[in-house]
Amino acid sequence: MNAQRRAPRAARRNEAARRAILTAALALTAQDGYARLTIERIAVKAGTGKQTIYRWWPSKGAVLLDALLMISEGDGDGTRPAELPDTGDLEADLKAVLHATVSELNTPEISKPMRALALEMLGDDVLAADYRQRLERPVKEMKRRRLRRAQLAGHLAPEVDLDVAIEMIWGPLRNRWLHREGPLTSSYVDTVLKTALDGMRPRP
Amino acid sequence: MNAQRRAPRAARRNEAARRAILTAALALTAQDGYARLTIERIAVKAGTGKQTIYRWWPSKGAVLLDALLMISEGDGDGTRPAELPDTGDLEADLKAVLHATVSELNTPEISKPMRALALEMLGDDVLAADYRQRLERPVKEMKRRRLRRAQLAGHLAPEVDLDVAIEMIWGPLRNRWLHREGPLTSSYVDTVLKTALDGMRPRP
Image: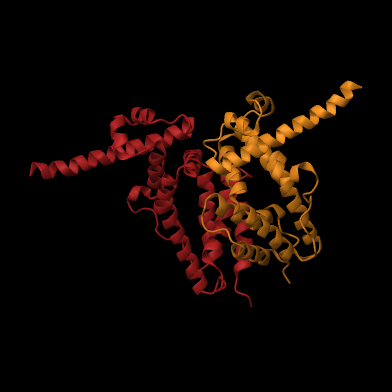
């Protein structure tokens, strides 16, 4: 009985520590940059021991991946929609999604840790595979489902390859962000979206 | 008189050393990876002193940038065309260019040093600015000129933003390569090209 009551309490305590660690990692990265992020500094800021962090994560990059998952999933409480909006108007729906992304990427608290993770992944294949599996793949599946519905509804030509479509709609935004090639604005993503959709409509 | 004759000879000797160093840097990166590349190993392979390398370049990333410029410019001997092909058929011309790029990116001797440089630049702003100035900007200008001619000839709609067009045509290829998101094939770039151009043709 006691053991049973202790278990959930321990789980809650673990969960609180986990959130504190992830939140600390995000804040420190946004504040001082990824190069200066260490497990030690995360532990101090989160008020936990270094050993707790090492027990749960193999590297600071892995901490950051979980921190970004925490943001993107609304911390698993089911608040984040598992589908892109579908009002029947593909361009309007994607515009709303892309504008939200532009606004996220213009927020240093999100953008800095994401950039750090992107960098780290280019040199760490294990982390990159984990990222693809846990974050990129489900997000891509979600995009694919929305585009497939649009295709079935006749808003995209039947021969359009949905993976190419995803790359043409979302790729330029990511490129411009990652390589800092220009300002990230709503009007930029609107232009890209319009061009891509015009190229993929059913031919009369 | 003697001094005058010595000068060109010294210049030739410098040029030979420079090429040996750049070639060695490329070969070592392709062979052992960028992490194991050091100025010392480049010097040994090139048969020069470390001091010669340090005198000309601030970092191994800077050596690699010059090495890639050497490849892309045909080593400044004017063999590389300063313009994209223009037969009047935009899609065919760009197809030829993109197929050549696919083939380059599938060549480890070129692809590995390029990836190493891309990585290094994400964390080194000075190197990134140098890259943009000396390699990216002239290449982009060349693409812009070709697309502007197409626009004047009525093959692209007059309202198309040429920088967006460049990103939509070349961006997916770079993304797929840099993030290893799928195989780099001619049919992939053909699909991207066709979609992008279909989205940017003049409206009747």
